[in-house]
Length: 251
Figure 1 (tube, one colour):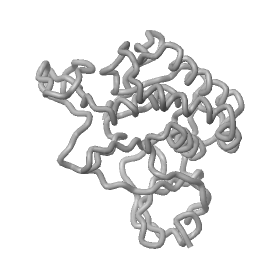
Figure 2: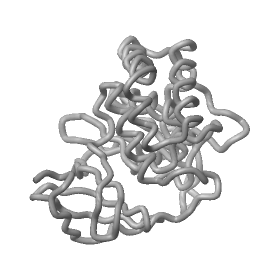
Figure 3: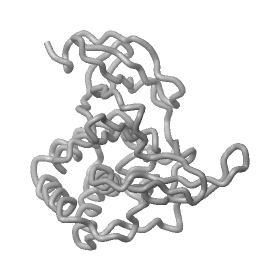
Figure 4: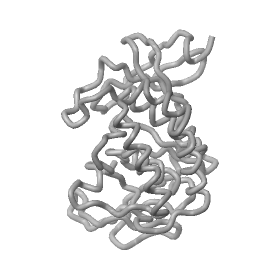
């Protein structure tokens, strides 16, 4: 037996969450379980399910070769078929994305935007300037992530960063909303271009076949086009003016 077919036992529900999300265990392995029947319909994502888009995001992460998204798959569970993802416990001593007093950007971090907190104090949203987070920003562009919040970045003790919560991805229209704008307009590095080239080759072959089980043909075409455009322009995109560029709330 394995996590894909062993008995899934639930320990509790993750709150707050707009869709049913549970923590469980399969053969001693902790997992997150999101049943399809617990999803709330989204007017701007009429095709497919959140669960299928989560699996598609994992497949793209694997093709990039960066181990960004924890192992994610579909299987039956106590509340029916849904997405199951391996749990990775983040290091609470780290914060890859955080809020600081306005202008007080720590060394090794990049400024994203300024605002006011609940006490009307001026603050700045910042994120770390690391290769791990840069790769995540590239990944988000390809999958057209409409909801990269700070809490969707998991900080591992060894410096690795996992990306989670990809239910609102792969839209055919530009919908990128992210807190990772610190490199906007900057050139891509060799590592990032190499990952995109791996993805481009995969999308021309077996990966496209795998994605057909989770996305529409047009969604796959648009993801392929975004990958090609990133390779061609070889730089991080700038925010668009016709769509909110920051998810709200950002955490």
